Each structure stands twice: as C-alpha cells, then as structure tokens.
Image 1 (tube, rainbow, N blue to C red):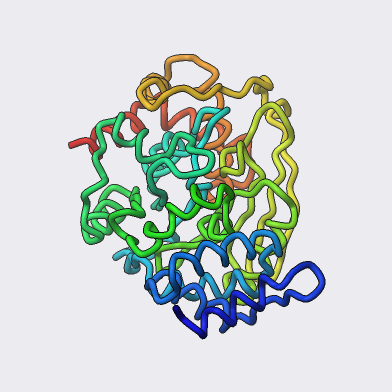
Image 2: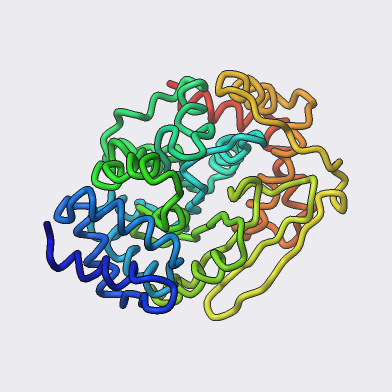
Length: 342
C-alpha cells in the first residue's frame, strides 16, 4: 500500500463537506502512481469513484494531463511546417449515431491536412463502437503498428491513429477499473484533451456537458495551449450533428469565440445517420467516398467542410463544404483510402 497515495485518496474522498481538491502537482503525482502501479488496485478504484463523485477541477485535469504527457506515446513534429489537427473523441465509442470522424479524417488528409486520432478498444461502461473496429473494417490494421510507423503515416499520408493498448499500455491498464466501478472516471475527460503530438497542432475536444468544456478550456490555459476548439457533437464526439444546432468554442491565441451552427442553413436536412456495426459503417464510408448519395454522405460533406474551414483553408463554411464535395467527387478521398490500405 502506498501511504502517499492514501493521503491523496483521503483528500478527495472525505465526503461532501470535507473533501478537498488536489493541487496540479498532487494530481500529476497521483496519476503517475496509478499509471505506474504504485497505488494498489483498491486505492485506484477508490480514487476513481471518489474523484468522480467530487468532480475534477481544471487544475486537477491539468495535473493529470502533465502525467499523460510525461508517460504517454509521443509523435515528433512532422518534417514540414503544417499544423496537425488532433481530434479527441470519447474512447467509449458510439451507440446511437454513426461515426463520421474516420471518413472526415480521410477527406481532410486528401486535402493535405495532417490529422491525428487516438483511441482504444470497446471500453466500459458504454462499450460503444470504437474507431479501431471501423479502421479494421476498412482494411486498415493499425493495431500492431510501432509508433514510428504511426509517425510515418502522419508524415506521408497525413493520417495517423494512436492505439491505446499498443502505444500507451500504462493508460490501458486502468481501463478495467471502469467496468469494476461501473462509472466513467475523470480519465474519460482527460482522453478528450490529451494529444500524443508534440509539434505545432490544433486540438479539437468533444464534450457533452458545459462544465466539462469549461474545465477543458481552463486546463488548456494552464498548459499554455491556445489553439483548440471544443465541439458539442454526437454523443460527446467531434462530429457535428444535423438534428440539432452544433455548439462550438474556438480559441486562437488569446481570443475565444462561441459559434452555433445549423446544418439546415447550409442546405442539409436534420437527419443524423444511425449507428450500425463496424462492417456496415465501413460500407457507408466507402460508398460516401465514391460520392454515392446518402445521408451519411451529407453528414460527411457537413463535417469535413466544417473542418476545412476551421483549419483555415477557406473564409466561409459554404466554400469549405463545396471544397469537400470536390475532393470526394474527384475521387481524391477514395484514392487516399486506397493509398492507406496499400
């Protein structure tokens, strides 16, 4: 048993009126002790549930992010001077709406934008469809790639995927606790914020609840991260919905602005594609990349257009959507998928 960790546990788990938040340094140390197995399984489980009940502060999340940056996978700056777009979506996947992020990433890569994604396998307690199963169904077996190969994909093909069990096994070791405690711990928020890339980047974090977004913004400020966006997307992902107004926060340098977007204002209906198994989603993606009409294709136009605009390739979202349509209709996006497959 770690006596030092016991003090952290006592501090966050003392109850509604007497519990206290950790400092940034304490949160970093506590996270390192959990990742490295210094804390016992009983202590780790108790901490996760106590921390969830208390709710993490932005300072604690900043400290936890310090630990992830220290021990997690790292991708070096790519050889050319382009900002990498890092998409942070919930690791526990999707259970209601069809993921569009993998298809959007292919379109963006075809436009010359380097895109980095990260995630793991099906994860408690939601056990939703994860990205890795979609990649596999698309013929992209990225489970066993060395981190150097992920780096190569990012540099040569403008698309990389960091796979938690392979590239950050210390964090993967904490996943079983989610099932045992029956709740998503604050690590689930951390996964929306963490980036394995150490160069010039723009981070996009999905969120569900406004307090989570506030904590993300404040923790990023403590880290000096000034280029980021927050997206209230489908099921906490970075996929813009069509059935409701999309709520986005955009931070550039010291300026933050709130943006609300309605797909109807850009000619799209309000129908969101429903979830399916990985094989069917892969079929939808290939069909969309072939420009075969579908609601999934419309969501791909909407999302990839938005991210082309967010990245700065266009001054107007309508122009960016037209660019996304051109990339797909020309066959460039399908060719990008084929390049990745081979």
